[in-house]
Length: 302
Image (cartoon, rainbow, N blue to C red; front, top):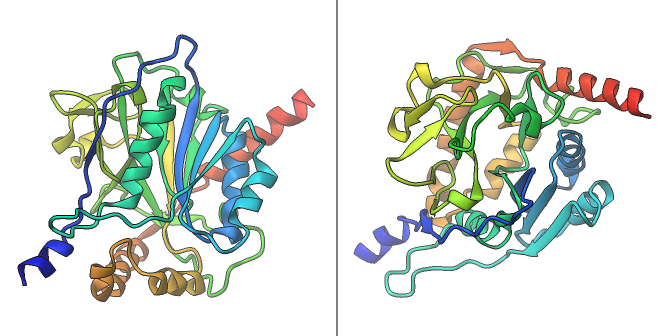
């Protein structure tokens, strides 16, 4: 009985020694874990390439479709590194699973982070959207060197009336999000990898006291970031296309959670989140606006 309970308690926090900064480090990298994301990963790659991401470190969780081919079609060899990541590791003594996503983020920071000012740890259904600037780097340029850990609140998008995957991709078809981003909020982080000492999916450790910043550069204790005063998406917005279409939502539920022990509760958990997202929505065109700005810049440059 005790062993069964322990198997439900994953090792979800990993410590690391921060990498040494290279003398010419700059730009934004993304650490991304993927599995069978062929349908939308090309759009994700194009969007973040346009947003100025310098490199994407892809941790492939045994994809069986053309996910990697799509990534290579849209990102050149200087922009993309693929690491096989299909293992399932556990604590030998207690049998607790080690969170594969957390391991990937720690590996990316420790092995590649020294070359970059920023490392973002996000998923394939999450888009980093510059709100006013033409790149993610420029959106963060006002932040001083003391800012090493930016928490970006999820802006949660639901099904937007789509039963089946619509033609034209994600960004142009999903324009309704939860009205209040800070209701039951969660975060993803973009950090200075050379200050990173501990990794979780939604929280990064970058020293003591445990501080994080919003995108305006205002510091809060990590435990205080759920308060409404912390909220900001003035410069960089994190769009989370949580459901996509109804069909894709069912596929998401069928795939199940990262931990097999939590599969039984997964549908109820996901649908509770969907209900919350769709209970009160507003139009959000920030991603569309960015693409329009990027197209204008490209037309001038070309």
